[in-house]
Length: 213
Image (cartoon, rainbow, N blue to C red):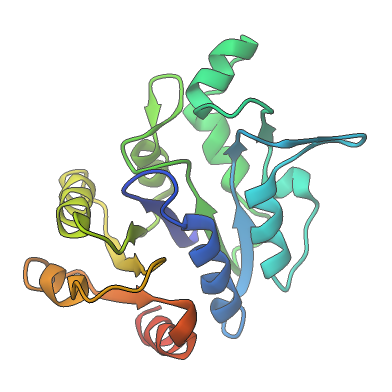
């Protein structure tokens, strides 16, 4: 299985927004498919629950698929997937989530977005890192570019490497302009490539992704 597993230091770091830009770049070279196997805080509609993040990821792909394939497990409550599963008293195992990430063609390049950080629970007794490991995909770590980003990035890299997982890159998401120079600081402590993402300089991000992937 070819692809990337999108994770981060936690919630609200901009994983989906960065991932959809990543998909648009990868579309030029690969047959990209998006997967977000489980999503909470879905919108209620007459046709069922709409997974907002999965919908954005799907729309970024050139190869459009039904949302049921992109996101198999959906919950309305704005809670962690683990709690949503417990509250609904349903059974979702790690193997079910892994199966939900698979596609039909070996030619597909699959971009899988997890839920929260790499050590965040995604199902009962299952962490995001467990799914990434079962899929065998390199991890893209999205880190919010702010004070504390160095610690968050290095802890996340260490956690992934302890599980013998490859970290393809760290993406520093500069939501608010700053002069912290976290890119240079993180690079001094790890060999993992560090890429900056900013709406003001998308061309630089595109160049870096094309060079690395």
